[in-house]
Image (cartoon, rainbow, N blue to C red; front, side, top):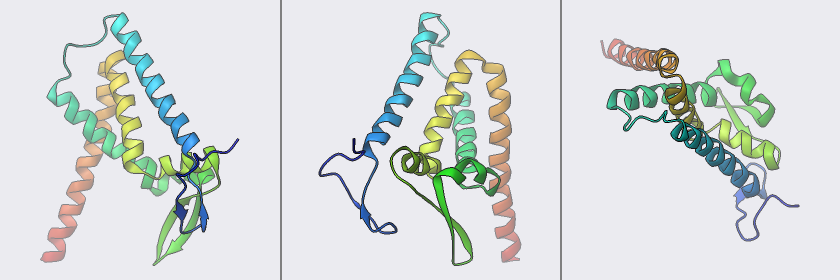
Length: 164
């Protein structure tokens, strides 16, 4: 069985081949939808869902998801998570990680190196946590959100220091 859908291949400049693991992307998407959908369906059946999610919870989940996704997809400290799915090289003095392999390995590599992709999974995890263990989830999310605010303050400080 091939992991591409005929007519949907694209050139991967690094690999020099026509290949996108669309079948695996579909499986990952289906897993996400089924898993998150099941969490919400069970929560609704057990009357765990609030009528609405508050703006402060949305902001907290959004900032925490941003930070967690950047940590997983980009930070050196999480390289061990990405390592089985990426090829590492140096480019202009910086470390670059590109998805490698084929099928599930390549698809997971693309997922783990894409902050926006990881962000959606992280946000879903925080929302599920908010439904089932809101106090604990808020505490965990607060750590990531505070760290994200700290990151922005570091950048602002460096920018101001460089201008002085």
